[in-house]
Length: 341
Image (tube, rainbow, N blue to C red; front, side, top):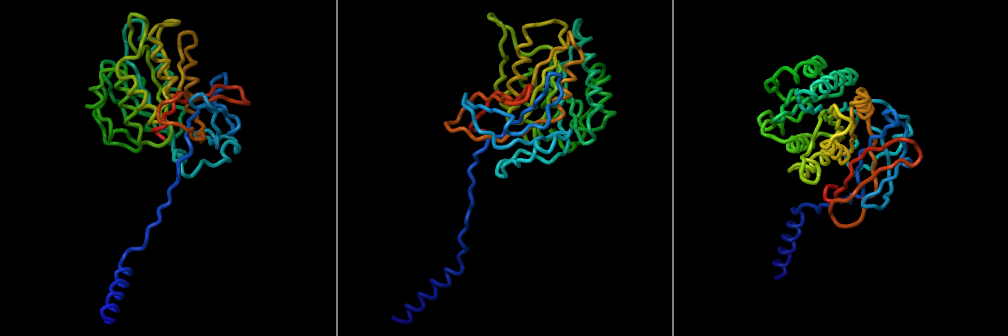
C-alpha cells in the first residue's frame, strides 16, 4: 500500500514536470482614438508648430481630451510639434517614408469642360514636380468606368506624361507588376473597369488603400458627383459604402472642381465627400490656381492627434476639430465610429 502511494506521488510529480508553464497574457485596453488633421492658414499654407493644446476635439457633441499631437509630413515642423510621443499601444504614427497621393480625374472633354480639365491637369504637373523623391503618386481616371494609369510610383517622367497627354489622348497602359507601396494586390484593371459609378470607384479605392500605413491624399479633379431628384441633389447609390471605405483607409478627399460656373447643383456631392473625409472643396473658375495651391499645402503634411476614447455604445457619431489659439482651418473626418477603434 505504501509502495503504491509512493508510485502515485511519483507519477503526479512527473506529470507536473511535463506540463508547460502557465502563460501570462498582458492585455492593454485601447483608450485612444486616432484623428488625422490637416491645418491650413488663410493662404492655403500648412500651419506648423502646433501642440496638443492648440486643438479642441469633440465627438458626439462632447469635448474629449487631446493626449498628444505629432506632425507627419514632408516639411519639418518645429520640435514642439512632436515632443509628445503618441501612445505606444495605438498604431498610426509611421516613420517618415514618403507621402501617398492619388490623382482621381474625371475625364470629360465635352464643350464647356475640356478647358477647365486641361488647365487643372497642367497645374497638377507642377504639383507633382514639387514632390520629394520618396513620395509616391498613383493616377486613376473615370469616365464610364474606373481606369488605372499607374500604381504608386515616383517616376516623374511617367507621371508627367500621363498628366500631359495620357488622360486626354491615350488609353491606359497594360498592367505592370506591383510596386511598393501598391494597391494592385487589391485593385486591378479588370476590377476597376467594373466600377460604373463614381461612388463604386471611391469604395474600391478606399478598400485598396486601407492596408497602407498613414493618411493618404486623394486629389479628386471633377465637376460633379451625386444625382438630381425632384427636391434637389442627393448622393447616388453606394455613397455610404464609399464614405466608410475612405474613412477606414484614412484617405482624405480634396475635391477640385473645374466646372465653368460660379455654382452648380452637383457641387453638393463634391463638397460632401470632401467634408466627410477630412478634405476640402475648391472651385477654379475665378481663381484657377487656388485649388492646386491649397492642395499643395494639404499635401505638405498633417497632424496625428491621439484623443481620449469616448464612452458609450458603438455607432457613428459626429467628430469635429477646431483650433484654440491659432488662426487657421482644421480639416478632419466628420465622423467617428466606435466599432472601428
